[in-house]
Image (cartoon, rainbow, N blue to C red; front, top):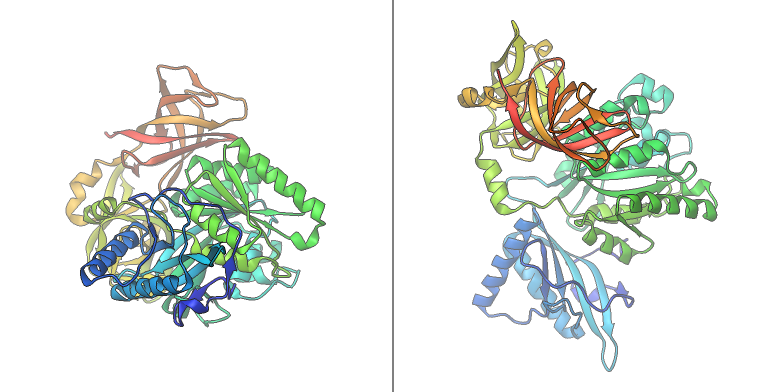
Length: 563
């Protein structure tokens, strides 16, 4: 891995990792996105240099702080290459451009594209800049898989920096309850963090003594959301996918057990929610090669059933290709690792460092920041000397310490109301901060609110917009739905199941399917849902997931029925 990731602290020409096996070209360059092709960057004039810096700033914004530069590549994707001297000069220019923006440059790969009559090279470089209002780039990764697949053990090894002892030592730090330690099975939603510094090196608890030190030492942070694998905790797992809004999914499969029914179910939820996914096959140290080959074939068969393309990762070059292709949700990388011996863990770490953040257009990000704040409550705590604290994600707007807000809806005398409160303090990744912005997770201390009044699925809103927000509180809503998976039974009026909308998880009844008696596999329909228990804060356009047994339907809210 040291040869794979070279920081440009020393002259770029000293990089020793040269690959000679590669395709003849890349796809043509596109204006959108965070990938930029440059044939050469040789001694640009001052005006040209400023233009290049502005262009880099745009690519970084498109990639939310990360950009990939392909040096020696024409705009049409042809790998023409540069001589060693021209390549060194172009890399020097790239570093000066990055320095102008306060960014860092890391060589991901150096390729020899021609040796006749002289060697010509292309270089792939990662440019990374943490936004001025953030300590690091943050990527949330949900971890799915069947019980005993080795999810918590793998996360323990990655976050603690120590290999497992074969008896589950590595996973103990992720468990939250005594019965989880005793059974070795996750039943709740737990979190772990793994950082990478500007050189692409791992920052975990083996390097730093606390989460605060990890956050202060890294410029990219992976937050793992460890979800339960046992079928009886399925609702908790799906809630973690919908409420915690991960950027991607890591599907963990045991080489000794293969693809189980729960594995298929978890993958179907990830597909239904449109989440990018990669597969990690664990416990390869326990199996013969023919066994692991069979498991890989099972995984490829599962992926092909959803029209996904598998990409087994076997080399350092495969890692970089997988990271680039990960933005295309049709490609699913497959890693094979061992938490006991450490086999291929460096490849997985390199992929996590290179994996692109979920991309949004600059216009969409600006629009989210300008909207009235909406904070989705996923966790509730009672902290001594602080009071009630809620954890979750800010879906839009900005919340500052001291803001006057409302939390709800709370049903009092059969009426949905919001409780006035004040944000007394804010924490992100266990460190205090003054501001949280759209897309960021945080915990908010709410002044004067009893914990007993609150529940998961509530929202914290700007107090000034109370009247507008109450219009979003309802028990009935309409949605355009599509059946993505079923067990042979059709969806009909009167059917009762679990509905997930953002941070809301509640039992719901299908009141009506407009114009149709039932819906089967692949059918689309306009469905009216009624929540069984209490009113919830919903929004038109929110993604809906309905689950009943093996039957799943996904869609969008189209209308709220308020009373």
